[in-house]
Length: 307
Image (cartoon, rainbow, N blue to C red):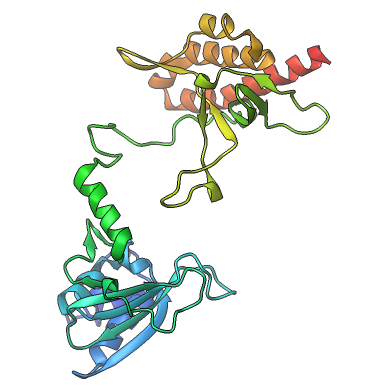
């Protein structure tokens, strides 16, 4: 089936669907394309279908087809609201016409409730030509679209060479109990382990801590509020960013107690292995595992000695 939808009948040489020529397409893409093709000049149709074709790579063919014909007339996006209980998917009500439209009328229903007249506001119309946003579509109107447009006019993207050479995950230490702490007051933090052997609160200079935002704390257009902080033992210097050396960490920040010993151990471990990490991918993997092991053993030993 997939081969036929992409290549058509053998020997014909004509591709049957433009929407199946990019990426690993989903079956609903040629279904939308065929529906539009079957309309007469005054015809209209509507689907409730996944909305990801407007942004994903595999939707490029359908986006080009609909942009050329200006067939998309109206759009109600349910965002992350799950319309169907039996499957997890991002859906939208999508209305198409055979005749070209001047604009796409866009509305949102993030709670699943659709207003009686979702397109009453004239500002809901997104003129054709503005739906494209880089290699994807951005079906936003009004203040949201104006804000994003201003960002792109005045700001550089995070992946701009002026900011960074590469965006990557970074080292995985398996040591969240050491690095992720809950702030209980100015200069006071508690480690994340729980139970009978849970660590007591520690006094740590706020300058070493950075707020960590994740999950439900990350929301659009609002300053995030979090009680989780990341231990960030780095300093800016003329050469860039570097780890604070072991001696500095141990000397002025005596209040860190056993957590300071664990951090210093990590620094020593990383410094001994940094050259080998760069030279051998296999050693890099072993080193990352070793960091987590060192932290765990250090933490256990310090707890045993203090008990």
